[in-house]
Length: 321
Image (cartoon, rainbow, N blue to C red):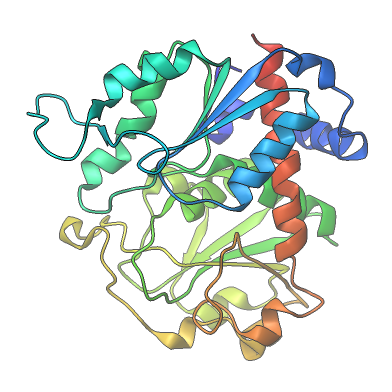
């Protein structure tokens, strides 16, 4: 596996899930693969779970790890070509990337959407520069449009906790005080669609439609209560307006409807549903204390599985070196 960005990169999902369980049972089994190999993790944006889980997975596989916080522990980087660099950015990404590639064997990139230029964000401009110029295998640690390590961990969690063969999984929008990217819901929808034994429903206010290439065969339901009825899993996440129906709204908050906050009443509509969220979560906006602290909350097991999803990905990338 030369790169890991979308669900297609992982190949057969059943095999990937089986491999995840194998690694979960014996986390240090493949340490020999990473011996004398170096992972470079590059963060253009903040991180907690992604940083810790990816570094732990790499250590489990015997790798050395270099962590670079761009704009904090390095020169500020220019990403655009054809500019006159007379501002506060001292180095261009097109020189920095091949230099980074000199010092490592694998590269993980975390770079969020700017939420001002949809075409730029959805072209995955920064990530694709690393793929093109680093000369090393590259994987996404959340990009402008996708977060595959999270979605893989979500799928592992659902497989571990489902009680029916084909669970109903609902991705629900919830309100937020800040404009957030669509990366997590995009990848969640993409991975749930690829898992043939999942009945996926997406619910959100009108105008918040995700890009069709991620929605796939999911059912869209604008009535949140109707969407929740009989659900086995509720995955709550805010996203800013994707600009699909109205490009001028891209990246904006066009709804703050607090009736979408997941509370006990919402969960009572489900089939004793489990609650999921990628974290960090704004309590009182996305979900109430009672729901996230309930026995049906899977947010901690879900976060723990980030180590496992990343271990599978890194293992496969090391095997391809």
